[in-house]
Structure formats: structure tokens, C-alpha cells
Length: 366
Image 1: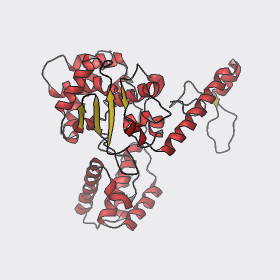
Image 2 (image 1 turned 180 degrees about the vertical axis):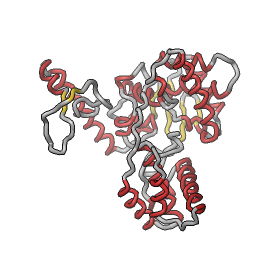
Image 3 (image 1 turned 135 degrees about the horizontal axis):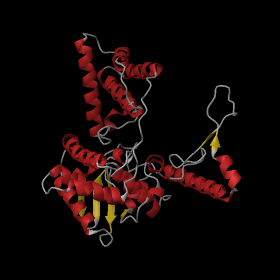
């Protein structure tokens, strides 16, 4: 899903730089709303798009609202004008639709959970979608590919060449391709076989067409484990994409994180992307048996590497100070005041655990 929908505000003046998958998703959204306006016999305009988009009482997550905003703006810019697209942005912002609260995905893939899911998926020898889902759980944490990237990845000896799904020149992606050097002597036989099968099974495949069936097989396996009580409610929210989050966690522990190797391995232009949005290194489960090529790392933004280095240094200093504090000082720092219109700090609530690698509103420690 994440490969098909790029939840990002786009610049209407850079229409041609959209990833192909993103453009398809935006076009489908635009056509869908155009059909609604046609049925009402209404001329498309910024105001009418906003009306249709917000009048039906849609209950959507924040990311879904961002996607629709970006998609319709892109569609208006191409079908009407850029000025009308900017008007749509202002009108949509004034409406301020309230997103529904959604529970966060785990952003981790424990080995025990992988084994349980793989056992269910491989109970029967037949079933291509089950086989692919199982292989993604095994190979994903090793190489970190997005599900849709397997279709255009090539293995030459010990180098895996991957076409970056989110590459947009100067905006996202560390080039059109990234390369990973695989350490075959570290990779297990099961992982090696899963990698090779995926490259064969998904070669040239259209993930938008087959992805739903593979996710369905995966979700059915989760459902079975949940019914029998073998996984928790939190684990039941696991997605295939968690394999990439686990790769990030292991990469942060194994590679030169501050030097941009994690970004290079994941296909990111900005080194801060993995820092702010991907699996925390505290969830690492082992040593990563792959490394990005020098060329892939060189394509990571130097400015973002400097920014990441500063952020990591700040986090390290913060953790050092927190560890050196007395017990009473730590307990005091673990309480924060809730927001108040009167800006009063009379009431406070304890922070039971860090959130997103942060403690007491401190720096990101992921």
C-alpha cells in the first residue's frame, strides 16, 4: 500500500517528477471524484472538489487525508490550472477535517513472530501467495526492500541492484537505483532461498495487481494465530512492511548510521527519514548481513547527514545526562504538564514509557 500511495504534499510545478505508482494512485482518485461531480452535473472547481471531499462525513486517518489532499491538488493542477490547485489547498485547509485516531503499527518483526506466521503460511505446499508472503517475512529483514521493489530487483553475484520505488529527482530516493552487497557467508540457507524465490516469483510483476492477494494470505495467517491466542492484539497489527522496519532497526545497529549507510541501504535521499519514521535500533534482533555500496551512500544528501549527526549527538548527550541523574531527578523528569489554554502547570501526568524514541519530549534516540 505504501508503495502505491505516497502520502506527501507535492509541488504542482513538479508534476513530471512523480513516481509512476504515485501518479497512478493520484489519477484514480481524481477520476473517482470527477465521476461524482459528473453525476451531480456540476462543473469541476476547487470549491466543488472540497465540498464533495468533506461533505460525506468521511472518517479517515491523517495519512489518508494527506493523500487525498495531494492527489486532488495534483489532479486539479493538471486538469484545470495551478492557480485553481492552490485555491483548493487553501479551501481544504480551512475545512480542517478531523482525522480518526488509528493505532500505530508495531514497526518491528520479532523472530518468534516470523516463525509462527511462516509455519501457518507453509502448512500446505500449494499456494503461491502464501509462499510469497512467507518469503517476504524471511527475506525482508535481510535486504529491506519495499514489497513492490522485488519486481525490479536484480541479483548479480553478491550485489543486489534495486530500483528505488520512491525516486523523484532532487526530492526523494538516493538515485534511480541502490545497490546492496550481500554477505552470503552470514546469510542463512533459508534466507538465501527466500531471496532467490522472490526475485523469480515477482520478476516484472505489478504489485498493485497482486499485492492485495498476498496481503490477504498474510492477514489470514494472522487471524488464525489471533484466534488461537498465539499472538497478541498488538502483533495482529503487523504488516508485511514491518520487515522493512526491522531491517532499519538492525541497520541502525550494524551499519554506519551517522555516515548515511542506513539511508543508502534503504533508498532514502535524506538520512533523517529512517531516523524519524522507521524501526528503532532498540528493536534490533541481530547483525545485518548486507551493506550499501559506496555509490549508494554518496547519493544521500550531505546536508541531511550533518543534520542526522547533530541529532544523534544530541540524543547521546541527553541519554548520558538522564543516566547520570539521581532516582528522584529521573522521576521528576518523567512527568510532563498537559497542554492548557491557561498555560497552567498545576497538573501533571507520568510518562509510562518513551514514545517514538523520545523520553520527556527529549531528542529522538532511534
